Length: 148
Figure 1: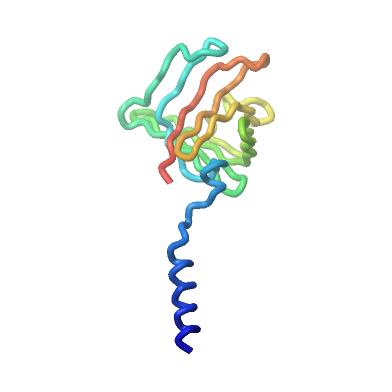
Figure 2: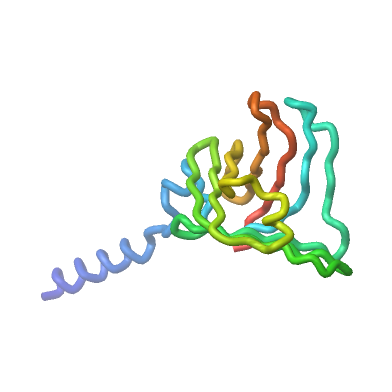
């Protein structure tokens, strides 16, 4: 009986000592989560030419979960609303967003199919989505950090 109890305690100790961090998250970061915009870059086709940081009070949040994306932008002292909701697919280096609905201000500048194909740079706590021209040259990026 003592051996059985000792074995059960040893198993409990080993299970409780096991870390919860998955190997997948170390080697294959996930875009799922909540992200906040920290800066934007403009490109000359390949290289960064300008860095823009949000003004005080500005906030842009993106949330990715289970194949769905939702984003919102708050700009102080502006009455224009910016938000969108839809689906997404991410690979190691691409992000495709297809919005189902969006604010009227976003609809004015959206492409006809409401789909955006972007280059993706992703690690555990940051990601960058880069807009490309028809020849694959970089135009601009949005750079985010994970907040949840």
